[in-house]
Length: 453
Image (cartoon, rainbow, N blue to C red; front, side, top):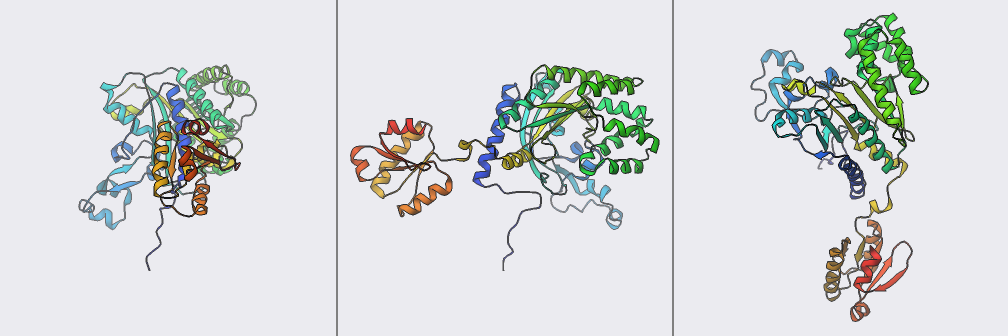
């Protein structure tokens, strides 16, 4: 007996109905990107491992999907590595490429590779899938789409303000209530300084980035494992649980970080972004969250995450400032800032709240019933006229029983059925039936076009 086919864990098939919903998401985000002056690019699904490795931290490197070299991929693998099962050092011998983990690092590679062709500042957007060898769970997949927008070649904090405004516009169009959480990596570096552990900044950010998933106590336990003293952890704890308004949090941070030049710079940047955003009268909540870390190593300034308020879900958008990412590819001094919309999580949120517009779901506006060869020939002429007017339509391919054809229209969610029988052929009309109300009208082709539009 043949084995039942399946797909890898953490991946999904999407039906026509689901694809209609997903395209609504992509089209909405794309329209806002274009509204803010971003241009589209695409990069390959796979990159050289030398491009990807070392950009996401130790944990990120573990989640990269590696692609085995073609042919005898073990031919260059040292026997001692195989015998010792030393997979860490073996990887570079058997794999030269990997599936992209995100769109930001490939974008940095793109900028460096094509720098002579780009006008700075360069505003790009990119909507493509990425892959992570993560443990699948609700809202977390191994293959998922990201919708990124980045600005490179500008140090101005106005870019951060524009990205916050763009996030607000996207979710306003979706009808999703959100909170935009902001922090600054310089503030986190300042905190690491004042608790006496500046060299532990990476360990600190990686750990506190998990607060929402594992809780503060488990974060503290992880920090102890990483070598932080109990005194340092006790000093850190209240900083991660600051309460009050954004202004009150900033005032507290100013007092605590007064002796940290880096920390005070981060506060200054945060004040500008929060102040400018508040002047825009955004629909979304904008909140300073000192526990927000975003564990990716390349962030150097503003960082942000978006959470849906009405659904339990992880971050549905994230991003931040990276001042030195292109430096690893030989192009120093190019600053960038970007955001990434998690299309798959947005899909889950919209499904949970059922916020899709009604016209998003229907793919065909009207279906013509097939009564036979003569009638079908007339229907095809009418269909050509409707399609020329931008109305999506189709004809049932066989002259099956009426019940079967109507069931097909119902199953597809087609809102109108067109009937062309002997009487309609004689009068040159079309009978248009509204499937929701049952109302039926006899129309000329021109009248049908107006009705269906």
